[in-house]
Image (cartoon, rainbow, N blue to C red):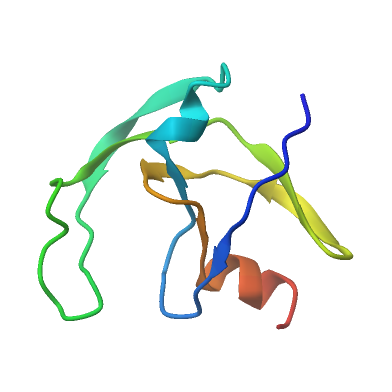
Length: 89
């Protein structure tokens, strides 16, 4: 399955995230062994609580950069520091 959507590249985001609205496209979810606490930019805890699920590895492409990424379930899609380091951006 191929899907195009807008994403946010955020060098301050430690992980990569996907919004609940995109999960409706039959993306399989796995339960996190350890729930992930998420902080907003102001240091406050994420208002929806810890992240409890993530996707299986998905191929994510941004321009000429592609690789498999596991996206934690939040909203919207955020491509974080792990992606930027991998592609030396």
